[in-house]
Image (tube, rainbow, N blue to C red):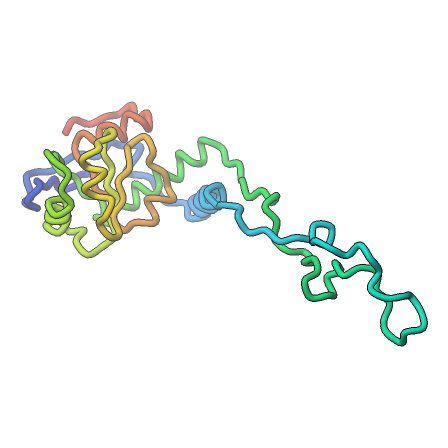
Length: 215
């Protein structure tokens, strides 16, 4: 499979051959769903918390005597029946949302999503992406010249680039990621995948593709 290669002006300069074993897989939607749900769960922050009757302040004294008042009997103001009392079955920060998923399944799901991006012409390759200084306006100009303009785009670079990161971080619907951090969840959160020739080689290397094709 081949994809078009663009320069920073949005002009087509050639084509890149995608490696077999990454971009030619048939998508198993059930496998991808299982992996994506597990990755989303592992990112979930457990911040919601409520107090049960054992944690609510007060309630040391019986509100009124057991018999003779004509009212229902109560033993503590911390009861969930009372305003300001404990919460029954409320959320707690002790809940664990982590889901273990085999590495082979995660890798297979990632390859399937990459294959889907390539087959649907949502995989874009630049011959190079160099930002000499931190300039969001220049980065926005590059993005707007490509087919991914006005759409969400995940930019994958071969390694950490501070200038590129700071130039991209304020652009809407755009995210920068290193090739080694690529995963199925982030890929599905963005419509387009944008990388460079060097980034494509880094992706193939990280995914341990034996049958590599020269660009």
